[in-house]
Image 1 (tube, one colour):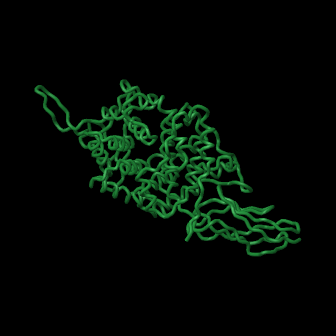
Image 2 (cartoon, rainbow, N blue to C red; image 1 turned 30 degrees about the horizontal axis):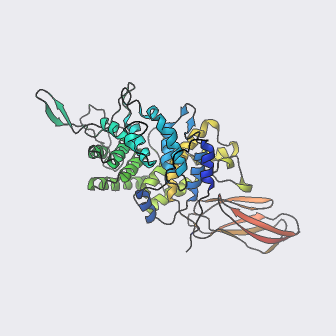
Image 3 (tube, one colour; image 1 turned 90 degrees about the vertical axis):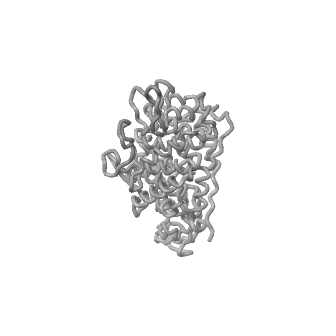
Length: 472
Protein backbone atom coordinates (compact mmCIF):
# COMPACT_ATOMS: atom_id res chain seq x y z
CA UNK A 1 0.00 0.00 0.00
CA UNK A 2 1.39 3.39 -0.99
CA UNK A 3 1.15 6.50 1.13
CA UNK A 4 1.01 9.83 -0.61
CA UNK A 5 4.18 11.75 0.23
CA UNK A 6 3.62 15.47 0.48
CA UNK A 7 6.61 17.70 -0.31
CA UNK A 8 7.18 20.39 2.32
CA UNK A 9 6.79 23.57 0.29
CA UNK A 10 9.64 26.05 0.26
CA UNK A 11 6.96 28.74 0.65
CA UNK A 12 6.95 27.99 4.35
CA UNK A 13 10.38 29.51 4.87
CA UNK A 14 9.76 32.30 2.36
CA UNK A 15 6.59 33.32 4.18
CA UNK A 16 8.31 33.32 7.55
CA UNK A 17 11.26 35.35 6.36
CA UNK A 18 9.14 38.04 4.74
CA UNK A 19 6.80 38.30 7.70
CA UNK A 20 9.60 38.62 10.24
CA UNK A 21 11.21 41.59 8.54
CA UNK A 22 14.71 42.45 7.47
CA UNK A 23 17.63 41.98 9.82
CA UNK A 24 16.05 39.41 12.11
CA UNK A 25 17.70 36.37 10.60
CA UNK A 26 21.28 37.45 11.20
CA UNK A 27 22.23 34.33 13.16
CA UNK A 28 22.53 30.92 11.52
CA UNK A 29 19.09 29.32 11.57
CA UNK A 30 18.34 26.68 14.14
CA UNK A 31 17.29 23.38 12.66
CA UNK A 32 13.62 22.54 13.10
CA UNK A 33 14.53 19.12 14.37
CA UNK A 34 12.08 16.89 16.23
CA UNK A 35 13.35 15.81 19.61
CA UNK A 36 14.47 12.19 20.09
CA UNK A 37 11.20 11.57 21.93
CA UNK A 38 9.10 12.82 19.01
CA UNK A 39 11.20 10.95 16.45
CA UNK A 40 10.76 7.72 18.41
CA UNK A 41 7.02 8.32 18.81
CA UNK A 42 6.47 8.98 15.11
CA UNK A 43 8.55 5.94 14.18
CA UNK A 44 6.13 3.87 16.26
CA UNK A 45 3.05 5.45 14.66
CA UNK A 46 1.40 4.76 11.31
CA UNK A 47 2.52 6.96 8.41
CA UNK A 48 1.66 10.56 9.20
CA UNK A 49 0.64 13.47 6.98
CA UNK A 50 2.85 16.53 7.40
CA UNK A 51 0.40 18.85 5.65
CA UNK A 52 -1.81 20.00 8.55
CA UNK A 53 1.08 20.86 10.86
CA UNK A 54 2.98 22.48 7.98
CA UNK A 55 0.17 24.81 6.91
CA UNK A 56 -0.57 25.65 10.55
CA UNK A 57 3.10 26.55 10.97
CA UNK A 58 3.03 28.68 7.84
CA UNK A 59 0.02 30.59 9.09
CA UNK A 60 1.36 31.34 12.55
CA UNK A 61 4.78 32.25 11.14
CA UNK A 62 2.95 34.87 9.11
CA UNK A 63 1.40 36.25 12.30
CA UNK A 64 4.80 37.15 13.75
CA UNK A 65 5.93 40.77 13.81
CA UNK A 66 9.71 41.01 13.87
CA UNK A 67 9.88 37.58 15.47
CA UNK A 68 7.20 38.09 18.11
CA UNK A 69 3.46 37.58 18.43
CA UNK A 70 2.02 40.96 19.26
CA UNK A 71 -1.39 41.30 20.89
CA UNK A 72 -3.59 44.02 22.25
CA UNK A 73 -1.16 44.77 25.09
CA UNK A 74 2.08 44.43 23.14
CA UNK A 75 4.42 41.49 22.57
CA UNK A 76 3.14 38.25 24.10
CA UNK A 77 6.42 36.57 25.00
CA UNK A 78 4.84 33.47 26.57
CA UNK A 79 2.76 32.71 23.49
CA UNK A 80 5.79 33.46 21.31
CA UNK A 81 7.78 30.82 23.21
CA UNK A 82 4.95 28.29 22.88
CA UNK A 83 4.91 29.00 19.16
CA UNK A 84 8.67 28.64 18.81
CA UNK A 85 8.63 25.30 20.61
CA UNK A 86 5.79 24.06 18.41
CA UNK A 87 7.49 25.27 15.22
CA UNK A 88 10.63 23.38 16.19
CA UNK A 89 8.72 20.15 15.46
CA UNK A 90 7.95 21.19 11.86
CA UNK A 91 10.39 20.68 8.99
CA UNK A 92 11.75 23.83 7.32
CA UNK A 93 10.78 26.10 10.24
CA UNK A 94 14.31 26.40 11.64
CA UNK A 95 14.68 29.95 10.31
CA UNK A 96 11.49 30.99 12.05
CA UNK A 97 12.59 29.45 15.35
CA UNK A 98 15.88 31.34 15.07
CA UNK A 99 14.03 34.58 14.31
CA UNK A 100 11.84 34.08 17.38
CA UNK A 101 14.91 33.45 19.50
CA UNK A 102 16.73 36.49 18.15
CA UNK A 103 13.76 38.68 19.02
CA UNK A 104 13.13 37.09 22.41
CA UNK A 105 16.62 36.75 23.87
CA UNK A 106 17.36 40.50 24.24
CA UNK A 107 13.99 40.97 25.97
CA UNK A 108 14.08 37.92 28.22
CA UNK A 109 13.98 40.03 31.42
CA UNK A 110 10.51 41.23 30.43
CA UNK A 111 9.34 37.63 30.64
CA UNK A 112 11.26 36.14 33.56
CA UNK A 113 11.78 39.26 35.71
CA UNK A 114 14.97 41.07 36.68
CA UNK A 115 16.12 38.08 38.76
CA UNK A 116 16.22 40.12 41.97
CA UNK A 117 13.09 42.00 42.96
CA UNK A 118 11.04 40.08 40.38
CA UNK A 119 11.92 36.46 39.55
CA UNK A 120 9.30 34.23 37.93
CA UNK A 121 10.15 30.55 38.28
CA UNK A 122 7.73 29.05 35.74
CA UNK A 123 8.66 31.61 33.09
CA UNK A 124 12.36 31.01 33.74
CA UNK A 125 11.84 27.26 33.38
CA UNK A 126 9.94 27.59 30.11
CA UNK A 127 12.49 30.06 28.75
CA UNK A 128 15.28 27.61 29.59
CA UNK A 129 13.42 24.82 27.78
CA UNK A 130 12.95 27.06 24.75
CA UNK A 131 16.60 28.14 24.75
CA UNK A 132 17.65 24.52 24.41
CA UNK A 133 15.03 23.99 21.70
CA UNK A 134 16.49 26.96 19.79
CA UNK A 135 19.97 25.40 20.08
CA UNK A 136 21.09 28.06 22.55
CA UNK A 137 22.83 27.68 25.92
CA UNK A 138 20.37 28.30 28.78
CA UNK A 139 23.26 29.11 31.14
CA UNK A 140 24.12 32.22 29.10
CA UNK A 141 20.86 33.36 27.55
CA UNK A 142 20.38 37.07 27.06
CA UNK A 143 23.12 37.65 29.61
CA UNK A 144 21.35 35.45 32.18
CA UNK A 145 22.09 32.01 33.60
CA UNK A 146 18.58 30.60 33.44
CA UNK A 147 19.57 27.33 35.07
CA UNK A 148 21.25 28.96 38.06
CA UNK A 149 18.29 31.31 38.47
CA UNK A 150 15.87 28.40 38.28
CA UNK A 151 17.88 26.48 40.86
CA UNK A 152 17.65 29.52 43.12
CA UNK A 153 13.88 29.43 42.75
CA UNK A 154 13.75 25.67 43.56
CA UNK A 155 13.43 24.77 47.25
CA UNK A 156 16.39 22.90 48.74
CA UNK A 157 16.07 19.41 50.17
CA UNK A 158 16.81 20.58 53.72
CA UNK A 159 16.36 23.67 55.83
CA UNK A 160 18.84 24.87 58.42
CA UNK A 161 17.72 26.57 61.64
CA UNK A 162 18.92 27.28 65.16
CA UNK A 163 22.25 27.71 66.90
CA UNK A 164 24.10 25.50 66.53
CA UNK A 165 22.54 25.02 63.06
CA UNK A 166 20.40 21.94 62.59
CA UNK A 167 19.36 20.63 59.17
CA UNK A 168 15.90 19.10 58.76
CA UNK A 169 14.08 17.73 55.70
CA UNK A 170 12.24 20.45 53.80
CA UNK A 171 8.60 19.56 53.00
CA UNK A 172 8.81 21.97 50.04
CA UNK A 173 11.92 20.28 48.58
CA UNK A 174 11.96 20.68 44.80
CA UNK A 175 9.05 23.13 44.66
CA UNK A 176 9.53 26.19 42.48
CA UNK A 177 8.34 29.59 43.65
CA UNK A 178 8.27 33.19 42.48
CA UNK A 179 9.80 36.22 44.09
CA UNK A 180 7.44 39.07 43.31
CA UNK A 181 5.62 41.95 44.90
CA UNK A 182 2.54 40.62 43.13
CA UNK A 183 2.59 37.22 44.83
CA UNK A 184 3.69 33.67 44.04
CA UNK A 185 1.95 32.27 40.96
CA UNK A 186 4.18 29.23 40.36
CA UNK A 187 2.16 26.14 39.49
CA UNK A 188 2.35 22.58 38.18
CA UNK A 189 2.82 23.64 34.54
CA UNK A 190 5.88 25.69 35.46
CA UNK A 191 7.10 22.84 37.68
CA UNK A 192 6.97 20.46 34.72
CA UNK A 193 9.09 22.84 32.61
CA UNK A 194 11.49 23.14 35.55
CA UNK A 195 11.89 19.36 35.65
CA UNK A 196 12.66 19.33 31.94
CA UNK A 197 15.11 22.23 32.04
CA UNK A 198 16.96 21.06 35.15
CA UNK A 199 17.18 17.45 33.99
CA UNK A 200 18.58 18.39 30.59
CA UNK A 201 21.12 20.65 32.33
CA UNK A 202 22.16 17.80 34.65
CA UNK A 203 21.33 20.01 37.63
CA UNK A 204 21.74 18.61 41.13
CA UNK A 205 18.22 19.96 41.81
CA UNK A 206 16.55 17.99 39.01
CA UNK A 207 15.65 14.99 41.15
CA UNK A 208 13.96 17.03 43.88
CA UNK A 209 12.03 19.05 41.28
CA UNK A 210 10.88 15.81 39.66
CA UNK A 211 9.82 14.28 42.96
CA UNK A 212 7.79 17.36 43.84
CA UNK A 213 6.11 17.28 40.43
CA UNK A 214 5.15 13.63 40.95
CA UNK A 215 3.46 14.60 44.21
CA UNK A 216 1.07 16.74 42.17
CA UNK A 217 -0.39 13.63 40.49
CA UNK A 218 -3.57 12.28 42.02
CA UNK A 219 -4.36 8.58 42.39
CA UNK A 220 -6.54 8.57 39.24
CA UNK A 221 -3.54 9.63 37.18
CA UNK A 222 -4.24 13.29 36.46
CA UNK A 223 -2.11 16.23 37.60
CA UNK A 224 -3.69 19.19 39.31
CA UNK A 225 -2.83 22.78 38.28
CA UNK A 226 -2.04 24.59 41.54
CA UNK A 227 0.17 23.79 44.50
CA UNK A 228 -1.00 23.73 48.09
CA UNK A 229 -0.15 26.82 50.13
CA UNK A 230 3.47 26.78 51.22
CA UNK A 231 2.44 26.42 54.87
CA UNK A 232 0.34 23.32 54.18
CA UNK A 233 1.58 20.04 55.63
CA UNK A 234 0.62 17.84 52.67
CA UNK A 235 1.98 19.40 49.43
CA UNK A 236 0.48 16.46 47.51
CA UNK A 237 -2.54 16.05 45.26
CA UNK A 238 -5.41 14.59 47.27
CA UNK A 239 -8.32 13.47 45.13
CA UNK A 240 -11.68 14.90 46.11
CA UNK A 241 -10.20 17.79 48.06
CA UNK A 242 -10.56 21.43 46.95
CA UNK A 243 -7.44 22.48 45.09
CA UNK A 244 -6.79 18.99 43.72
CA UNK A 245 -9.25 19.08 40.80
CA UNK A 246 -8.26 17.43 37.53
CA UNK A 247 -6.43 19.66 35.03
CA UNK A 248 -6.20 18.04 31.56
CA UNK A 249 -3.84 20.68 30.12
CA UNK A 250 -1.52 20.50 33.13
CA UNK A 251 -1.61 16.69 32.88
CA UNK A 252 -0.67 16.76 29.20
CA UNK A 253 2.16 19.25 29.76
CA UNK A 254 3.45 17.23 32.70
CA UNK A 255 3.59 14.18 30.44
CA UNK A 256 5.25 16.09 27.58
CA UNK A 257 7.91 17.64 29.81
CA UNK A 258 8.60 14.44 31.75
CA UNK A 259 9.08 12.56 28.48
CA UNK A 260 11.31 15.33 27.10
CA UNK A 261 13.34 15.36 30.33
CA UNK A 262 14.64 11.92 29.41
CA UNK A 263 14.06 10.62 32.96
CA UNK A 264 13.65 6.84 32.75
CA UNK A 265 13.32 6.13 36.47
CA UNK A 266 10.61 3.65 37.50
CA UNK A 267 8.69 6.36 39.37
CA UNK A 268 8.49 8.54 36.26
CA UNK A 269 7.54 5.66 34.00
CA UNK A 270 4.75 4.64 36.40
CA UNK A 271 3.50 8.24 36.57
CA UNK A 272 3.49 8.51 32.78
CA UNK A 273 1.53 5.28 32.42
CA UNK A 274 -1.10 6.48 34.92
CA UNK A 275 -1.38 9.91 33.30
CA UNK A 276 -1.69 8.37 29.85
CA UNK A 277 -4.44 6.08 31.06
CA UNK A 278 -6.32 9.01 32.56
CA UNK A 279 -6.08 11.05 29.34
CA UNK A 280 -7.35 8.10 27.29
CA UNK A 281 -10.28 7.64 29.66
CA UNK A 282 -11.14 11.34 29.30
CA UNK A 283 -10.98 11.27 25.50
CA UNK A 284 -14.33 11.07 23.75
CA UNK A 285 -15.21 8.78 20.89
CA UNK A 286 -14.76 11.73 18.52
CA UNK A 287 -11.15 12.10 19.65
CA UNK A 288 -11.78 15.35 21.51
CA UNK A 289 -10.64 15.96 25.09
CA UNK A 290 -12.63 18.32 27.30
CA UNK A 291 -10.89 20.96 29.37
CA UNK A 292 -11.70 21.45 33.06
CA UNK A 293 -12.44 24.25 35.47
CA UNK A 294 -14.46 27.38 34.88
CA UNK A 295 -15.62 27.59 31.25
CA UNK A 296 -14.68 23.96 30.55
CA UNK A 297 -15.27 22.98 26.94
CA UNK A 298 -14.32 20.63 24.16
CA UNK A 299 -11.63 22.52 22.27
CA UNK A 300 -8.57 22.12 20.07
CA UNK A 301 -6.07 23.36 22.69
CA UNK A 302 -6.81 20.66 25.23
CA UNK A 303 -7.29 18.01 22.54
CA UNK A 304 -4.04 18.84 20.75
CA UNK A 305 -1.96 18.89 23.95
CA UNK A 306 -3.53 15.66 25.16
CA UNK A 307 -3.10 14.01 21.77
CA UNK A 308 0.53 15.05 21.55
CA UNK A 309 1.20 13.73 25.05
CA UNK A 310 -0.43 10.42 24.13
CA UNK A 311 1.58 10.32 20.92
CA UNK A 312 4.82 10.74 22.86
CA UNK A 313 3.66 7.85 25.05
CA UNK A 314 3.28 5.84 21.82
CA UNK A 315 -0.47 5.41 22.21
CA UNK A 316 -1.00 5.49 18.45
CA UNK A 317 -4.77 5.13 18.35
CA UNK A 318 -5.52 7.86 20.88
CA UNK A 319 -3.04 10.30 19.30
CA UNK A 320 -4.49 9.63 15.85
CA UNK A 321 -8.07 10.21 17.06
CA UNK A 322 -7.11 13.51 18.67
CA UNK A 323 -5.26 14.65 15.54
CA UNK A 324 -8.28 13.87 13.35
CA UNK A 325 -10.55 15.94 15.57
CA UNK A 326 -8.14 18.87 15.59
CA UNK A 327 -7.77 18.68 11.80
CA UNK A 328 -11.53 18.97 11.40
CA UNK A 329 -11.22 22.39 12.99
CA UNK A 330 -8.59 23.57 10.52
CA UNK A 331 -10.63 25.13 7.68
CA UNK A 332 -9.14 24.77 4.21
CA UNK A 333 -11.64 26.51 1.94
CA UNK A 334 -9.70 27.35 -1.19
CA UNK A 335 -10.30 27.56 -4.92
CA UNK A 336 -14.02 27.53 -5.81
CA UNK A 337 -14.79 26.66 -2.18
CA UNK A 338 -13.15 29.84 -0.89
CA UNK A 339 -14.62 31.73 2.06
CA UNK A 340 -13.60 34.68 4.22
CA UNK A 341 -11.17 32.27 5.94
CA UNK A 342 -9.26 31.41 2.77
CA UNK A 343 -6.63 34.09 3.44
CA UNK A 344 -5.99 32.41 6.81
CA UNK A 345 -5.56 28.88 5.48
CA UNK A 346 -3.76 26.74 8.05
CA UNK A 347 -5.16 28.49 11.13
CA UNK A 348 -6.94 26.23 13.62
CA UNK A 349 -10.15 27.28 15.35
CA UNK A 350 -10.44 26.90 19.11
CA UNK A 351 -13.94 25.47 18.63
CA UNK A 352 -16.05 24.48 15.63
CA UNK A 353 -18.46 27.39 16.06
CA UNK A 354 -15.57 29.86 15.72
CA UNK A 355 -14.68 28.40 12.33
CA UNK A 356 -18.30 28.42 11.18
CA UNK A 357 -18.71 32.11 12.01
CA UNK A 358 -15.34 33.11 10.55
CA UNK A 359 -16.17 31.56 7.18
CA UNK A 360 -18.52 34.53 6.72
CA UNK A 361 -16.75 37.30 8.63
CA UNK A 362 -13.12 36.24 8.56
CA UNK A 363 -11.19 36.13 11.83
CA UNK A 364 -12.30 39.19 13.85
CA UNK A 365 -9.45 41.37 15.08
CA UNK A 366 -10.41 40.79 18.71
CA UNK A 367 -10.47 37.00 18.16
CA UNK A 368 -7.10 36.72 16.45
CA UNK A 369 -5.32 36.03 19.74
CA UNK A 370 -7.56 33.00 20.37
CA UNK A 371 -6.81 31.59 16.90
CA UNK A 372 -3.08 32.06 17.49
CA UNK A 373 -3.22 30.23 20.81
CA UNK A 374 -5.26 27.40 19.33
CA UNK A 375 -2.95 27.05 16.33
CA UNK A 376 0.29 27.07 18.34
CA UNK A 377 -0.92 24.07 20.35
CA UNK A 378 -2.61 22.41 17.38
CA UNK A 379 0.72 22.13 15.55
CA UNK A 380 1.77 19.60 18.18
CA UNK A 381 -1.35 17.45 18.08
CA UNK A 382 -1.39 17.49 14.27
CA UNK A 383 2.01 15.77 14.24
CA UNK A 384 0.10 12.49 14.53
CA UNK A 385 -2.44 13.12 11.74
CA UNK A 386 -2.57 9.96 9.60
CA UNK A 387 -1.52 9.95 5.96
CA UNK A 388 -3.70 8.98 3.03
CA UNK A 389 -3.82 5.42 1.78
CA UNK A 390 -3.27 6.25 -1.87
CA UNK A 391 -2.31 9.02 -4.25
CA UNK A 392 -4.93 11.69 -4.83
CA UNK A 393 -7.19 10.94 -7.82
CA UNK A 394 -10.69 11.63 -9.11
CA UNK A 395 -12.77 9.30 -11.29
CA UNK A 396 -16.02 10.20 -13.11
CA UNK A 397 -18.83 7.64 -13.23
CA UNK A 398 -19.38 8.49 -16.93
CA UNK A 399 -17.18 9.43 -19.83
CA UNK A 400 -19.94 11.45 -21.44
CA UNK A 401 -23.06 13.23 -20.12
CA UNK A 402 -25.55 15.93 -20.97
CA UNK A 403 -25.38 19.54 -19.77
CA UNK A 404 -27.30 19.88 -16.51
CA UNK A 405 -26.81 16.25 -15.53
CA UNK A 406 -25.63 15.48 -12.00
CA UNK A 407 -22.67 13.19 -12.46
CA UNK A 408 -21.12 11.10 -9.72
CA UNK A 409 -17.42 11.51 -9.01
CA UNK A 410 -15.27 9.32 -6.77
CA UNK A 411 -12.29 10.82 -4.96
CA UNK A 412 -9.47 8.58 -3.74
CA UNK A 413 -6.44 9.42 -1.62
CA UNK A 414 -7.77 12.00 0.81
CA UNK A 415 -6.18 11.67 4.23
CA UNK A 416 -8.64 11.22 7.10
CA UNK A 417 -10.26 14.59 7.98
CA UNK A 418 -8.41 16.32 5.13
CA UNK A 419 -10.41 19.12 3.52
CA UNK A 420 -10.73 19.34 -0.25
CA UNK A 421 -12.73 21.15 -2.91
CA UNK A 422 -14.37 19.07 -5.63
CA UNK A 423 -15.22 21.31 -8.58
CA UNK A 424 -16.25 21.65 -12.19
CA UNK A 425 -17.22 24.81 -14.04
CA UNK A 426 -20.43 26.10 -12.44
CA UNK A 427 -20.53 23.74 -9.46
CA UNK A 428 -18.45 22.74 -6.46
CA UNK A 429 -18.76 20.86 -3.17
CA UNK A 430 -16.60 20.74 -0.03
CA UNK A 431 -15.48 17.28 1.10
CA UNK A 432 -13.48 15.82 3.97
CA UNK A 433 -11.54 12.59 4.01
CA UNK A 434 -13.17 9.71 5.85
CA UNK A 435 -11.64 8.30 9.01
CA UNK A 436 -11.30 5.01 7.14
CA UNK A 437 -9.45 6.72 4.29
CA UNK A 438 -11.92 5.20 1.81
CA UNK A 439 -13.15 6.94 -1.32
CA UNK A 440 -15.53 9.92 -1.20
CA UNK A 441 -18.46 9.95 -3.64
CA UNK A 442 -20.20 13.21 -4.57
CA UNK A 443 -22.23 14.60 -7.47
CA UNK A 444 -21.60 17.74 -9.51
CA UNK A 445 -23.93 19.38 -12.01
CA UNK A 446 -22.39 19.77 -15.46
CA UNK A 447 -22.44 23.15 -17.21
CA UNK A 448 -23.87 23.90 -20.65
CA UNK A 449 -21.74 23.74 -23.77
CA UNK A 450 -20.68 21.05 -26.18
CA UNK A 451 -17.12 20.49 -25.07
CA UNK A 452 -14.85 18.50 -22.82
CA UNK A 453 -14.98 19.65 -19.18
CA UNK A 454 -12.38 19.15 -16.46
CA UNK A 455 -13.39 18.11 -12.96
CA UNK A 456 -10.83 18.68 -10.20
CA UNK A 457 -10.29 17.82 -6.58
CA UNK A 458 -7.96 20.24 -4.78
CA UNK A 459 -6.49 20.07 -1.30
CA UNK A 460 -4.32 22.69 0.37
CA UNK A 461 -1.24 21.41 -1.43
CA UNK A 462 -2.27 18.88 -4.08
CA UNK A 463 -4.75 18.35 -6.88
CA UNK A 464 -6.04 15.70 -9.28
CA UNK A 465 -8.24 16.01 -12.34
CA UNK A 466 -10.30 14.07 -14.84
CA UNK A 467 -12.35 15.08 -17.89
CA UNK A 468 -15.57 14.05 -19.61
CA UNK A 469 -17.49 15.07 -22.72
CA UNK A 470 -20.50 17.32 -22.15
CA UNK A 471 -23.25 17.69 -24.77
CA UNK A 472 -26.22 20.04 -24.73
